[in-house]
Length: 233
Image (cartoon, rainbow, N blue to C red; front, side, top):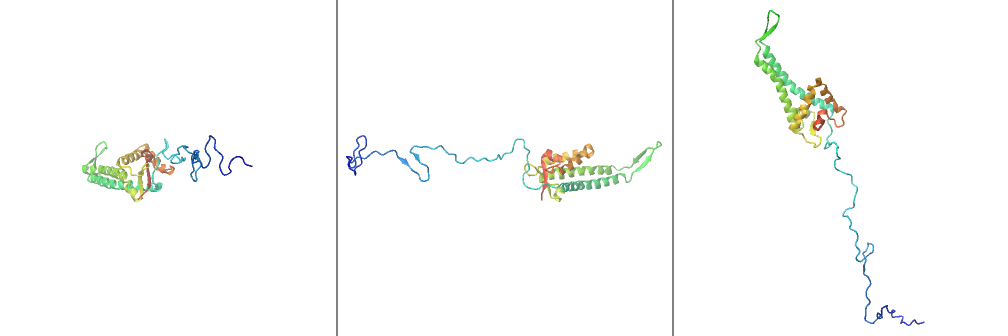
């Protein structure tokens, strides 16, 4: 049966549009763009802006508030035995000149002296050499100046006293890994000397023994000035 239309001519559009072959062209529908490998989006669609880099949970790398400063570098701590050995070497290096100088001074001071006893039995020395006495007093001063140079200035600037140099130890700032400088070196030496001068030397003994149970092998005066002793050249 025939439906009134030519089977080879498309049915007329609504609104009176002309059929095929009339020279008129139908208006195109909405235009869509297709991208290969991407989901379909109609024209005019705008996606939400994407961050340039995906968020990643990264642990906080900064130093936590109130956390103690830790040492830098990977040099191992100096052993307690080597530290005691360096201390004894430095003490011997300062004691020998003092003993020699003071001993010579005492000999010169009293070699020609003699004692006179009065009627009450009190003895008085005569003919004591003043130069010998002065030389005897010079010995401790030489030892003090040597210790200031060796344990404060030299060790502060280079990290090593003569004793630590011999046993390959180095004193450094625990926060930078570098020598502390002469100022901190002097303060460190002064604290050690004060510890030896009070409490009959008991505090010095505790101070020297402290690295045996301390995690960072520090003495008490090390903790005050933030220094550590490590293996060095």
